[in-house]
Image 1 (cartoon, helix red, strand yellow):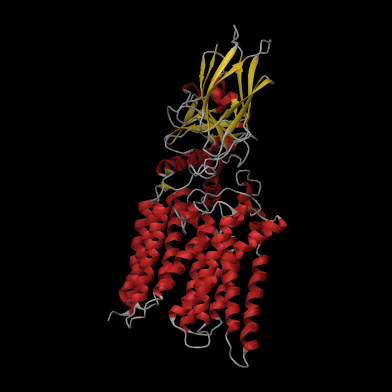
Image 2 (image 1 turned 120 degrees about the vertical axis):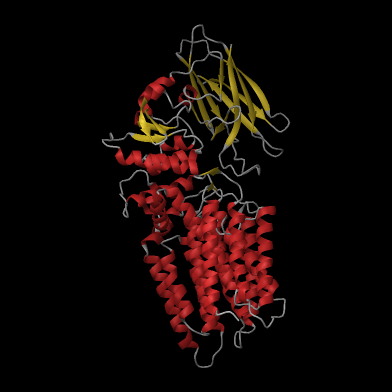
Length: 634
């Protein structure tokens, strides 16, 4: 029989080798283009520059009060690699690997046949469920919404839960497991509040289960210290400044895309199913609570308590929303990934419990938990690819060096990264905000949506790639930063000129059209979408003046959703066009006013704007309505 020390060393070595392979294999993949990616990246970037933050830093916005433990870890990794993006990638990959490794470790105390069954069933449920049916399990926090800190905290929360369970296995009826969880609750809040609340809820359920164990004459002596642990832990959580910060931030109603849970009723249904499975697990433990418990019984107890606490928090959030208008649907949906993961994990445990235990322990089979964890990471990170990070990391390093050497910035003027090759809009937004120090909101949002930054007088210098239209104007070049070109912003804006109401305006064009329009997306395909409920386009009237404009359009419609667009020309003669699945495209004829105005202004209103995600088309959360191809003047 192999030495236990050798087994532990082999497991540790295997974990480190697989962790290294995962980091090198998947750090070049961006999983989300959510604004959260840039927000978390900005905080990590600032912490790379200094351990403390400047409260007057306009680039931080809400991240100035965000809990920083996960970001400090990422900043340390960022210093080693020279990139905040790489630092976040390494931290996220290792956190997910740790999380699923903890699940594998939780199973390792089972007999060999139950252990193998639990691992195989869980792998089938999660891999098939995620790859074939799109079910979101742990790790999906990084996709679409990019909940970086929440994922790190989830892994840090599961680790003490598993350690507490194994501690109870070695020393039954000890207070040490509950004390461990009680200590970790307020500490976890400095990573993210949601997993901290899950851990506090689990501690409370475990305390209630402990109270249900009957030992004559010892009830008070057993449960008074438990009540003290919960009270102290809750008090420390409440007085943690990060707890109050997260409560403030949690009032924000963000966007989250889930495959099967689309409304509050779906969340309630999922919570009910998960609670039923967890209740069954706790019942299995309760039947033996006053006798000799097996390791499987402990799994029932701890994983059941964790799941019941999570569903209870979700339902409590729904209750507060429904009856007191506190919180938001977004806050309810943030528990969904955890509930779906718990449902899969606990179902695997219940299925494994249907088999009689074998006499043999897992032995080297415990490595199966580590292999399973690596498989789950590959399943998550090999999923939908938003973009590659190599180009963004190279631009970040160049922009950081430029920022360090930059001096004498004028007040209320900022540098921006725009149109860098192979870098998505959110990457340019991160570079502008996180590296160059532009504001988190206001003018920087134009960078996020690939619009001309307005007002132009706030644009100082522009970093872009050579030859990129419309930014790289050779006459406006003022130097270089690595592979990037540095341009004078005022000079670039002067070269855009005015948009004229003549000939044909292609909505794929850049420069003057960007400057003359608002409420339109960046060019894509053959034109631009309207974004939001209103849009504006202004062009200079030429001589002789045109009398008619023809606008080629198509609506974002489905069998159940139609669109309306109302157009005013110089504030007069509104014209409404309807789009449906039967008639999705229209060429709109607009009569131009015969007055002496120097310009023509087209005002658009879209009362039925909707996101493609709401229509079930894709994960795009933007409110879109009408796609505009071109406008022709006669």
